[in-house]
Image (cartoon, rainbow, N blue to C red; front, side, top):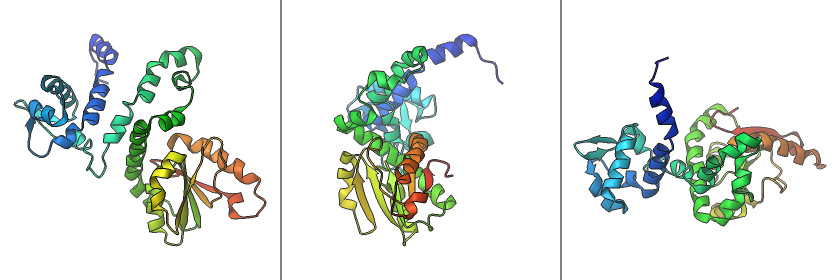
Length: 273
């Protein structure tokens, strides 16, 4: 392990919040979209995105020092990392960067001391109504969150399809699947299967026009409403463990003898299992 200056270590960590905030702001402004293959000055970029030239230059120089954008002769160009902030990139992470700058996340980390002192979730203190209620009450924040989850799903789709065989399932439920990118990809790969997308009412409202004979939508609250009866469920990230319990609990009382009583659950995560 390389030894570092202890003073520099403490200084960098203590002021570490500045770097991610710079990334959040640049993502919100759409700076990467304004920068094509031709290097541009901070003044040019600022005029394109509605920012102060000198302030934007300082932000971009800090990001460039950490590999996001590149700078030479007072001009800025793309780096591999900054290209991921473009909206049109096939693996765009712009919305993902924006998501972590949302008040619902940023203010939760600001209350970290509450969790350390009490062992209780900071989010419950800062937003007692819960994340999902917050997103329902703040549509723009909800749009950013859904876009971030869709981007994450896009990045995982190829790996999931390559490592998991869905051909044995007739009806597949995507729980909290947003726009249903993974479910769409599975249905394309398994023509005999049908799917149901389960998510909050405002999410389902946005994608209802995509319904078809093979894809239906059901609105509800994952935490209190009954899940649809399916042969397999897709569950994403942090909710997959709770989701497995919900699936088993909701299907134990099924008296129809359908395969839903013997569910197999596919965890929709970065590493399919």
